[in-house]
Structures are given as C-alpha cells and as structure tokens.
Image 1 (cartoon, helix red, strand yellow):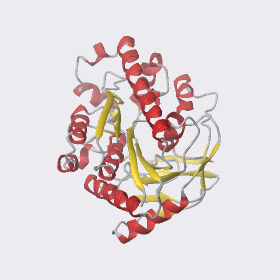
Image 2 (cartoon, rainbow, N blue to C red):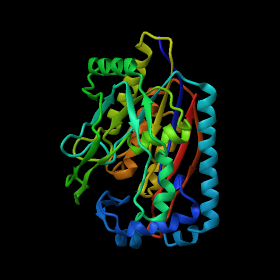
Image 3 (cartoon, rainbow, N blue to C red):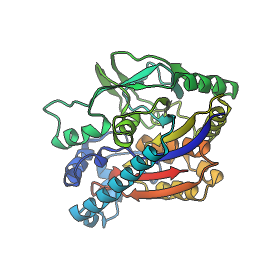
Length: 349
C-alpha cells in the first residue's frame, strides 16, 4: 500500500516574491480593493471602514526594518521546506489548493475537484509593461518558465473513485482549455461582480507557486485537488474540509502501490484583511492537533483570502498520523488599515 511520508503547509502571497521595499506601495492598492470582509463581524466594508477600526499603533509597525525582518523569516522558512522536500524525495505529491478566477468562474464552480490528465500546463507569468513594478517583481514566484507538469493520473483516478465511494461527489477534469475567462459574483459577501476576458492561463497560482518555490521548476508527479474556498454559495465548510482530508488519507493508504506520497497545502493565512484572532485560532489547533478546535472556526471568518486556511484544514485531516512541526509565521500587514497577507509555514513528518 502507498504511504504518506511528508506533509507541508505554505502561504503563497505575492509579498513572498517581491522585495520588502515594495510592500507599502503594494498596500496602497488596497484602497481600491472591493469585497473586503470585516474581521469583527464578516460584513462587507470599505478601506475607510477598516481604517476607522484599525489598531492606531499599526503605522508604527509598517517600517522597512520590520518588513525586512519578516521577509527574512519567510524566505528562511521557504528554504527549509524546499530542502526538506528535496531530502524526502517523495514519488508523487498531492497538491491541495483553490482557484482564484483562473480556471473556474460562475459558469461552472465545483466545490471539490480533482485533475487527472497525464500532464498539466504551467505558464510563465508575463505581465504587461503597464503593470505596476511591484506586481512584475512578484510574478516570478508563480512561475517563470512554461512547463508541462507531470500528473500521477493513476493515483488521481484512484482518489476520485475512492472519494465517490466515501460520499464525496467530487468534480473531475482531465484537460484544460487554451484560454479562460468569465464572471464571478454577485453572491454572498462577494457583492461586486468581477469579470475577466479570456486569456491564456496555466496552473493556478497556488499550486504553481509550489512548483516554482518548493520544487525549483523540477516538479514531482502531482495530483492537483481544488477546493472552492473563496466563492459563495458552494464553499465546503471547515468540517467538510477536515473530513475530506481524512478521506484523502484513507484513499492514499488504500492505493495498491508502494509509492511514497507527500501532501502539500498551498494558501493562507488571513488576507486581504489581517485577522490575528483566526490566525491564532488555526495555529493553536494545528499545534495541539485538536480537530474539534480546528473545525470550530466560524465560517464567517473564513472568507475571501482567509478562506485558504481551509486548504491547511484538509491537509491536517490527511496528515493527522504524522507529527506537526510549526516553522514560522509573519503578520504581513502592509497598510495602516490592517490589510495585508499573513504568512505561515509548517511541516508534517
């Protein structure tokens, strides 16, 4: 039978790939961000609303020295994950992530989906000349070369079959189109719709970040699993994610193969508004290996980017037989209003 030999959780935000000197400029963009969610009650708020409620000491923390310290902490954590993955050398990697208006739109938005083609394309992130300098500086972290990433189609098909037997009616897909575009919203907290014209699009940025930053563009055969954490109305609940993780573990262990499997969750922690309460809650539950505490996180706090914590929840369900090692976290503030991207890194082994 197959064996799970390694697990990882990693953030993937653009601040992890851009110089800290650019973080404040990036944060200034948040003034125009729509569909922001208040960490105090889950309501839709403006940047000005956030600024009114923000910790008045925040501006004193938004210094280049603090940014450089956070950047060094995060980069050292990424290097450790990269090194550990290279040392363990799993035969295949299950990638748990979510799509963010890259492949899935309101014409078809699966709650849970598994890709099982023979390969999956990763496209180098190429931004127009008119893009802000900080966005161009960060683009490399989501892929800087075109790749055909190998997929362990046999394991992927086995997972699909086993999930269905276990009561998880997952969507499946085995090829992708050349171009993707569409509309999201309005639905739930996502009150303002957004629309993207069709454009060439490879592997979404969450799993693509893992291929680039943790695998150095030398990917192991992967199985991409997508959870719709972001977009109402069919987001899987945190309890469903943990149960799905347990089903993933059972499915891997029942695979008639001697392969050594790694499970990597890409995403989180709180963003685009920092919520230290839910970050602390999730970290405490993960460290204490407490499924009940983890699954008691309120859904209204797990919205927008913060919803990516659910990718870690699924990983925790799959990896609960391994030891959890917290590596690092950074607060990730980038504006006086408390917007930003909290980052976290961990290993199960």
